[in-house]
Length: 110
Image (tube, rainbow, N blue to C red):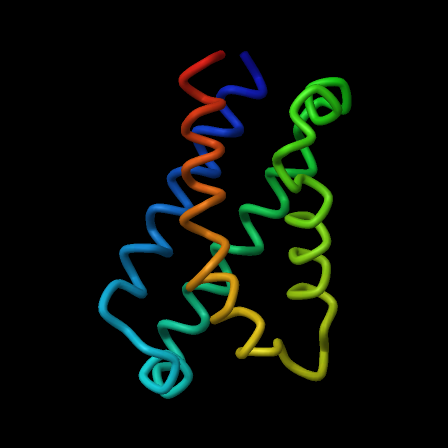
């Protein structure tokens, strides 16, 4: 049950971010500091939650990049030089929708 609640929370963060960037392009994204900060914050939250998934569950569902999500969170939190916005945009553009689909499918099964 704990893992399902965590996945539900991650899905909510993903859906927030996807709604924030809907219709945006890279140039408008980087010019809007509030949008950048909102997206980066939510990605950090996703990573933090990914780290709370039970290790056995993580192993059973290795198709989800749990460690990558947590690694991104660490990069965001500890990168005192600034976050690479090109990388963040790439994640938002290409990876987040796929992660959303994978997690929704997993959520529906448990």
